Length: 108
Image 1: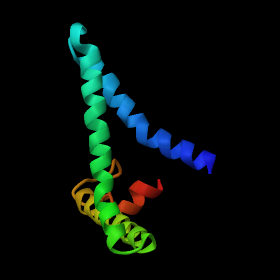
Image 2: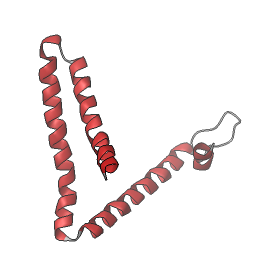
Image 3: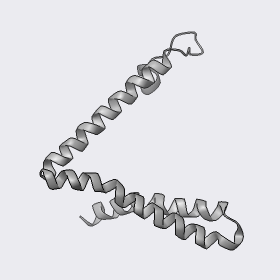
Image 4: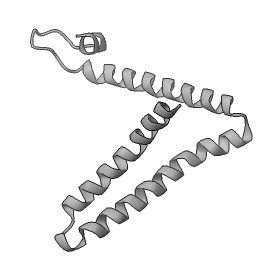
C-alpha cells in the first residue's frame, strides 16, 4: 500500500511541481516565487476539480460502478484515438511508397 500511495502521489504532484518550475523560469526575476505559488495554487484547484465529477458519480452509485464507468470511458477514448490515428495515417506514405496504417506504425 505504501508503494501504491508513493506512485500515486508522485504521478499527481510531479506535474504540479513541473508547472511551478516552468512558471518560475518564464516569470521575471522579481516575481518568480509569486509565479510559482500562483501556478501551484491553480494546479491544486484544478486537481481537486478534476476529481469532483468522479466523486459525484460515486455518491450516486457505488465505487465499483464508478470505476467501471471510468474504465469504459478510457477504452472508448483509446479506441477513438486509434481510429483517428488510422484515418490520419491513410494520407501519408512511407519511404518505400506504401500507404501507412496503424499496424505498421504501432508494431514497428
